[in-house]
Image: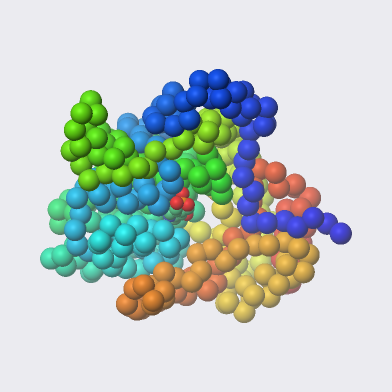
Length: 362
Ligand SMILES: *Cc1c(COP(=O)(O)O)cnc(C)c1O
């Protein structure tokens, strides 16, 4: 029997490379507290992206919360129902109200026209999501924000390695937040980062990360908390960073192979990419939920576990948000499936996945 295949597996540097860092950490006794490895990870990831300022934190969800805190937002934040729950929960955790706007059915990101319809006198910000590494219509969103005097925080948790109009997508919005979780393109096991082009905002994020202390640590000047990443996590991230380009190249090649072979199935649609993409996921949109369930079952029978991502649409979690219909997001959520895609995925296995799908569909 073949081994089970999951939707993703982390891209990991050789353990011996991590061990070298661990030995240095053990020797120095510096485990955390803005240590030298954290500082190196923060700087090298930033330089890799050619981004302006970067504050590394414990995870992507906290990065989103810190961005709301740093911008001192109180009120309604317009966001996407087609995302992971963390986008909504970060808004709620900071005492703000998530207001959903519907997505574009082709790009799967917030539809700028729908954002404008949701603006009220209580709106303070927009939190769009770059879905599956496909950037939002940043130009249109930033224009809306400017016109209505709103802040923009991009949930860029899928966007490591992505550019928009020739520069890192992290350089857009007031703050862009990413994730270095094990399942993401670059991982430090758990981790996240806030990016901004504003040096004062960056300094504020770094104070919030460290209990709100002033730079000289003699005073507490912000409502902060403990959001520091440890040296051990930073070491894992730093080792994995060396292999990021290789992982990105591999993803793109496999994505194109999937897309090219699956194009023979007329009932499948693929996400429309608007600029650049890191191809970190391979989502397929079926003609109906029943077709999706048939394919999901056929794959599972061969121990291949694709994932219904994002499902269900966030506006249907009525225990935490009042239901407001989001017809496009609800419809797409029911018909979208992410196929296994990761560095260690064997080409034979990918072809087996494609064969099963074609057999089931045609
Ligand atoms: C992963 C993810 C998050 C949260 O990141 P964590 O590092 O897991 O906290 C937020 N938004 C989106 C779209 C994500 O995929």
